[in-house]
Length: 169
Image (cartoon, rainbow, N blue to C red; front, side):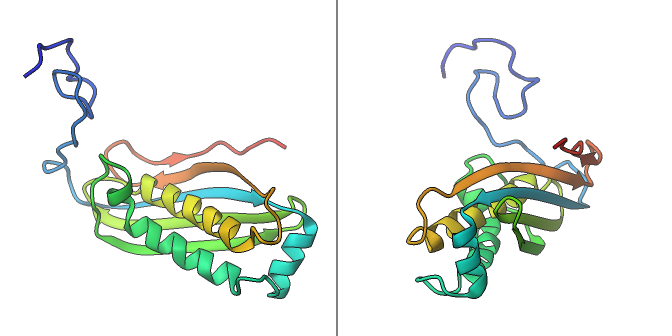
């Protein structure tokens, strides 16, 4: 064992030696928890119109991206080293065209009954949905930008509810 460096006990993901560890959630109460994350993918008006018309070279851009986001949320514990595998009860991914952007706003809502929250699952769903949109439409435009992925809200659990402040324009 390495020499104890400092008192890292107040940091839940570090042991007394400053090494990463998975948090023990076995004593936590099982509660209903929900997280909502959002993000955008910006593209040209022409690319947006082509996707909306269903004329993208790779086929069903939106359907594929939505399924990818749902699958990604279920795999979060395999992607992020210290995340706990969770018994996810519901994953909803919405991809909404935004002509002012132009592009799409992605919203993911993930719900569980568990000992820990689902923020990372919602953020992962938004991220992979956006990356899949990019992949499915890159033949049309390589300059698309994935932007502003963030947690919008989380409910349940010991730390209480969180709601992001409204963004000013």
